[in-house]
Image (cartoon, rainbow, N blue to C red; front, side, top):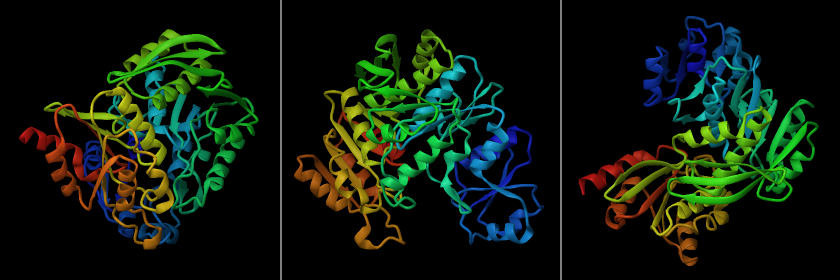
Length: 449
């Protein structure tokens, strides 16, 4: 958001509790001053507007100063909507899984088609080297997060994004820190669908029964996609290889085109199919879409190959929800068939460090040949009885015949991997955080050996 506002001609400064690379380097290159730590003095000289991120709580010293000084403020989603989406056709990607990849695909293919889209996405799009663009075209692609907006607005972010066309990939229970159960999650998506205009279009994965339930309430047109017979768009003839995935898209039961991209796995083929459906709605020809998909370079931290050293392939992936872990490992097992797959998992999210998914995780690692789990950093405000147990997960995986180990620190994991990895292995590192830079450190260890 800071980069977009700066690009639009505003003077921008900001605050964060900690400032570190790569974002600190990025902001410095854009000549955006960032204060380390929150203080009322950071609001001097008095700004015209303050954008409040959802990590900021009501008792934050700068939030208190906002009220005292009566400085105008908005949430991040409000600012995005007001400054950048209002005069565009809004294409919003929502769902529990696949938002970043799907939104990146959509933005990249619009760019390939020379439509100069604007976008804001939760991951670095390789073709742009950043997660945003202020374009001159008519389309804005937004990753529509169901997480809450700000301390003064507990509704989901995606309600602010004025969806004209929305993709709905999946709906599962997640974000246990703000949602009580699946019904609470569903209520947010019901609101999203209700907010769409009658002349809008909901592109929904009807393989998901919860998505079908929500989509059935839409007043706008619903375009279904998936592998089931109920979809307007159906995935067929799927092939998964290390270099990527190929599939046929059926529209109304007839082949619309054969497509390839670099992203392995059934779930990524479905993400691609959703984008194909949107682009067809916008009038793009199959050959243009196929060219864009073939040229897609991927997204950082989504099945990203960080390096290959001495025959060992090290992959970085954001997967942390049990379903995402299962689908990611299944995709990698299919793509690298015949090679040993080692999964290294860090439970780090507010949900994964609670025991809400304790039993489900044991069903998510079956595609791996060896699983290594880090002991999570405890959530201070969560009672011990409600915390996730890595030791229990590893015990249950071993009982299921999946060789597994857990370790208290990243250093312990690196020491263990040094003794077990061998040429031909694929090491998939799964975390929504930096994981103590384990990817680069493992590659450096392999170089030294």
